[in-house]
Length: 127
Image (tube, rainbow, N blue to C red; front, side, top):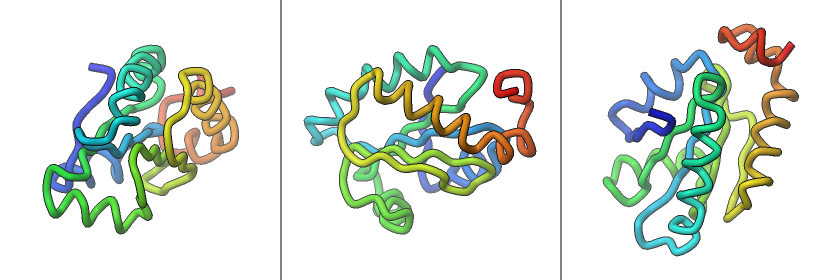
């Protein structure tokens, strides 16, 4: 499955301990821009399956999810945060196009190749 659902309960396992570049999409069902971005996120996630992990966190699903988002500096939705070895390395606030999402993924892969190489099996992809 290209996109996984995460929440405060599985955050450490799926995001902090992840050994690949991970993109987390912070969203909620009442956000109109989130509804527009959802198919874009899913499509790009399918294109990078096996190379980059894509996850979604509904910020309004629970108090714990909202607090987690706030602790990461999420001030609005949609927001994307890119993690490498559990560390936030890039962030995008607001709606972006499919092309912009691909460019951001590629740019993040390139800029953080050392982190990625140390934490994952993506060496063949980035070098």
